[in-house]
Length: 109
Image 1 (cartoon, one colour):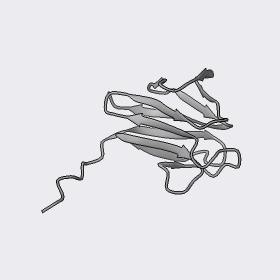
Image 2: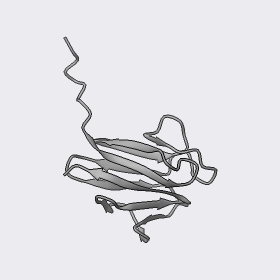
Image 3: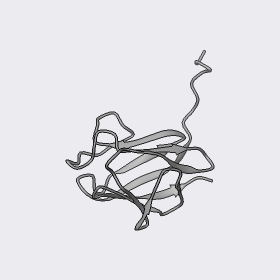
Image 4: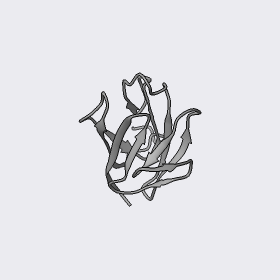
């Protein structure tokens, strides 16, 4: 009998990398916490010298994708505009953090 405590992952979209060492890679975004940085084991582990081990966290549900945390010393730009915690990401939004750039390919709403 399967463990009832394990919830199935709901794929909400992908983060497609446009620039940097991860260019061309895409990372599956599922509901829950989505962490971006250079540390192995993060949902988006990007080997970039200027990106800290854990630089950015998104909170993802099937209804929204929100920036929930940004590491000190990092600046996040969404579609070229400086953004802060609680920014909501939409379909095709471009994210830039410390010369690492990607976009949301699809987001389920």
